[in-house]
Image (cartoon, rainbow, N blue to C red; front, side):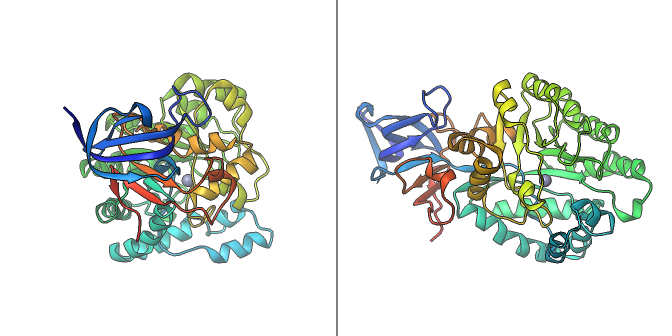
Length: 409
Ligand SMILES: [Zn+2]
């Protein structure tokens, strides 16, 4: 008797990213992959494929299949743009100076508050499409340009609506603790009260966020203030993640690791003790080379130490209007290698397996393995090294979301 399956892809090389398979990419060459009910049900060398009757067969023509890419840190729902500030920074002003003079995040807050839900949706969708066209099948989207109850909800609802109308998985984070809104000038603790007592409970009631994020920096919130946000998130059963140590060492990473955070993001200035704390807590290091590049930073995250300690390293765009208006995860893979010293295989792990872990989704995706979602990309390439090496010309041949072909026509 033969077993049926929905889809069989044969004659492919699979970069499974499965760490239990020997080799940098967990490669299975001349493989076959069977999919049923949106999940991978079999993957292995083609010659070992058991009898099966597929509804559809795809000849992979010797191309490479990877897990769908995952962008685990974006702020892509926002109003306006900051091209004017770009010019100011090129003229010599720092990100911090621009932020302190009423620009920066607050100028995007003004534009996002002013935008209708419909305008916000229409501005955000092309950014999402740019990522999807590169084979991104899961995207995290943060709020944080509202900084008041209504606008934070508007941003998160927009993210949920993007998921309803586009073939992509979207997970959301409430980043109300992103910056101090002007109406709370000089009263940061009262704004933290608003987040903990009103914004997070409302977001949780509507199930609008899958996690809670915060900006723990000299120009953001203090460790003590962020600890209060973490405590409030825990009461609502929401996991946390932290923008940490991008501009200076603040102790944010130690706090996050202690709290069992999913990830700490940026971490250019972490100490050796912070690295060990992350290794112990299993907190993922999310590296954001696009922001490093845009801000002309010079302090690189301690990749060698993170690697040595066995900390999972994810890579993401940080897609946002200020420090990284770059909607390309593939470019981040290239930058992760060129600027931070990742290997091409680490870069691919950073946008698949490790990115899934950074979102708390490693049980369902990020690796090609039976039992996991059939989010997969077929690439016309003869080695997966090309994904980090080149930018622009290599496009997915086919993109599958839960086994369904969602390649844009
Ligand atoms: Zn960010």
